[in-house]
Length: 220
Image (tube, rainbow, N blue to C red; front, side, top):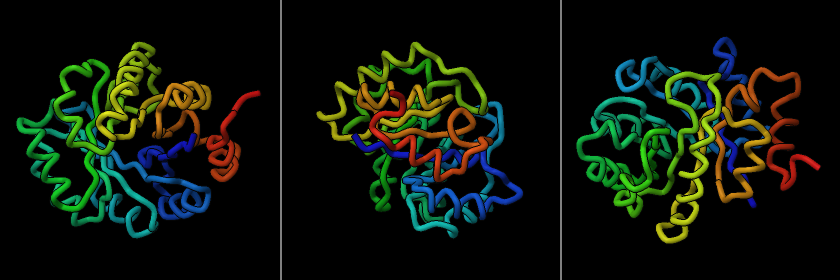
């Protein structure tokens, strides 16, 4: 099964961001993941527009934007113009998520929803015909370095049952270690947002790590 590898650029070396992007690109990155936070929907501030623009101009690979902000519908046109290929919103942060998802697709972009650990699948089922990706947050959003929340596995298993019916891909984001990648890949997860648990701050090169993570069996 193909594993979609998505480095979380919030964890990159900001003193050498362009170099990091180039190395990750050559190593086999599939999607560059960009977190945008407003200090309101989540208690933190994320990457800036200049960071997004730098990553976008430094790679021809797909770039997504994860809008952890209130009223994301007000910003999808801006990020579309900046070159985002995939735009994730949190339904809880949008009064009219169906309108926003439709807007994303009307701009020629792929639409995604990110669902928090406390958000049930039943509350977002009506949105599934409108999305290309569902990203399950396996930690509470806003900060790197948190512990994986095991109860989210049940949510992932339910989404796996639904993905063929609605034709979306399942992504996971939050404390994704190599062990979690193998387990969740076997369950039916398609893509993995990677931070310090599996990719950044390691002694091995990005090429060595990503090559290993894309193998069918990480552990023998």
